[in-house]
Length: 359
Image (cartoon, rainbow, N blue to C red; front, side, top):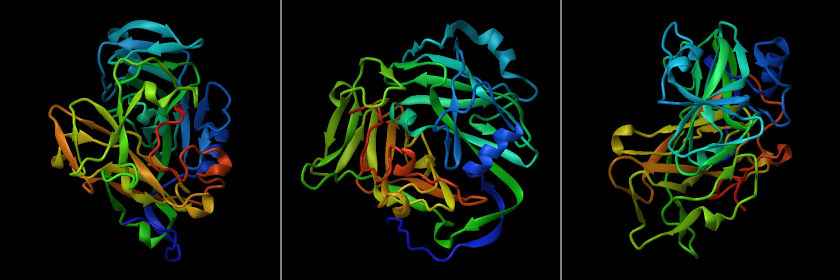
């Protein structure tokens, strides 16, 4: 079913944890809990997240890694770095290579604040595999409560080589207040909702999605609207059986059947429905900001775009097959700005849409 805006009245209730809105993120910057090597950029603070910016150098490394307890990333980097790349004037990151980039943001969190990271929507739709690593981390994209230290982005382009530079934004971070939090909760969003894949497509054309081409040119991650779709993507149309056979290690852009709505009182994240139902992955970029698809923010419900990749074996996706679940988390307060046209959001009221780089 599609989520709609008509919800029961919200209530202020105790919560185990809740997400900080943009005005709280601004306060963290002012207080020094978020340390910036350069002043905050225009649009860097989103309704419930902060974009993370690449620093001045990238390191080509032998393999992905986690530092583990008591170990800093810089210590591991000394033995794993193959060469150093300057990013200030831009550099191309090649497909299949693993890079580590110190970020311009560092943290000095209080003991009740933790954080989670995710690729930005445009990053996921380019099939750039990106994860954030903190010192002493035992998991990617997770920052423990009370963490003090630098942040690093691990980057591995999977399909297209990408041009990046100092200040490029591939990841975003969301801050979570733990324990004794009071949050705004709307009952309809408490349980989350299953999302299924649309392989029936447009009734008039049968168009259902895109398959990425191989051996393409470079995509500049900071150049919206710069590239022709046909140079990088092949259209996919529905067959008689409304199913799609995923080729191993091929990248697809599809869409959900459901129209997603995230009210201003909540943020949302897509998680895998069940890893046991098949060897495929959807939605690398899993954050949905408050106001996404919400009518009061210029949306009428927005489809979730699915970044799909099969692993090891061909896999058949059926029309309407459940592929993920949208989990809602309350905010500590309604954000002073929500996702929508008013702040230049690229994917409000979207249907099946590629990243902002393609015209």
